Image 1 (tube, rainbow, N blue to C red):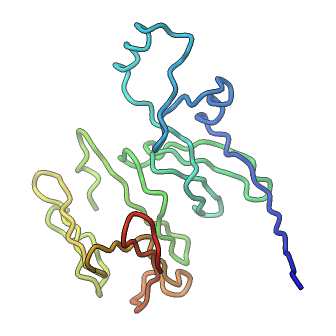
Image 2 (cartoon, rainbow, N blue to C red):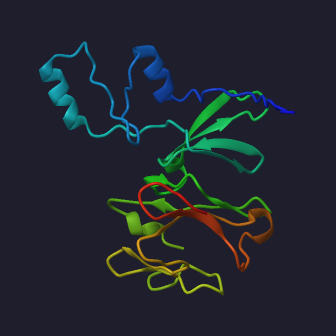
Image 3 (cartoon, rainbow, N blue to C red):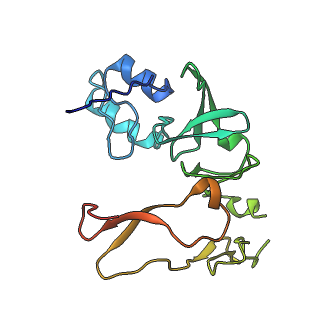
Length: 205
């Protein structure tokens, strides 16, 4: 006897500027991670050449993760743009530029979220005034008491990271570690589960 269970769930594309432009022009307009933009067929070779001097256009294609900020939910990627979505209807509500609130160029799509809703993330800041956002010089920004990892700002404005080695092995990689997040986030824990890579393709847990 074979029992087949079918699961159905609603889904929609997040209608970011990158998505709308790609659908309108029927081509990838903004270069994404691993995907280069197609040149505009309406431009001649000289017009295409001069577009290289305009700089790289940052995508708002929020396709990596969804997480809560307060009572709202945002689709996110690895740039400075996040997109508010309605979790009931899956409608795209509004685009938010994180640069309007903090001095960053981009953030990760995998923040840590405390039980009280506080969101912790890692951002990068490049260019003039980059070091002005850092909570003093020489102070270890890592405040967890049970780790040897450190993050310290130096005199030149760079952040020097010293990791705590959790796993090491010959010719093996430890990717995408997971814990019981609801119970152990921010607490000392014993076990973590992750993908193991002996070669290029993950082949073990």
